[in-house]
Image 1: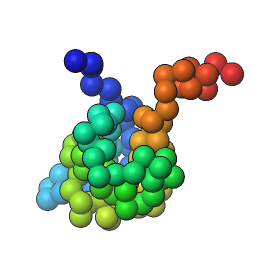
Image 2: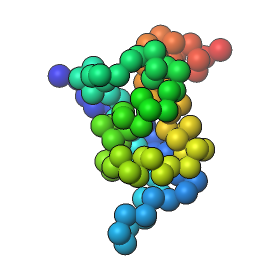
Image 3: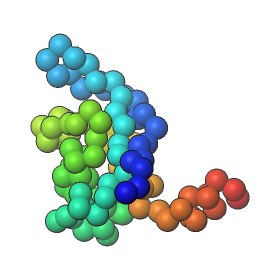
Image 4: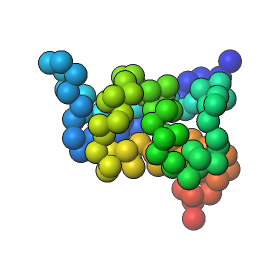
Length: 100
């Protein structure tokens, strides 16, 4: 079994308020294929909002609810989406982008 891979913390422009707790940053876990069930890889790569909204609660730490995801600022949704898209790249592509 492979190690779990997490993103660096993503600092939110607008904190999520959950009761008395403020969530100011989240991490994303690199999804396994089962967590992509029912989703289109093309839609994920295109950062299709409905698809990203479905995926975020499956891979976020702390786990965000659907309602919390629906209330994200567009800038926060974009930051999270681009991190998700980076998980789709093969290792070689990531290495190439780091070593131009």
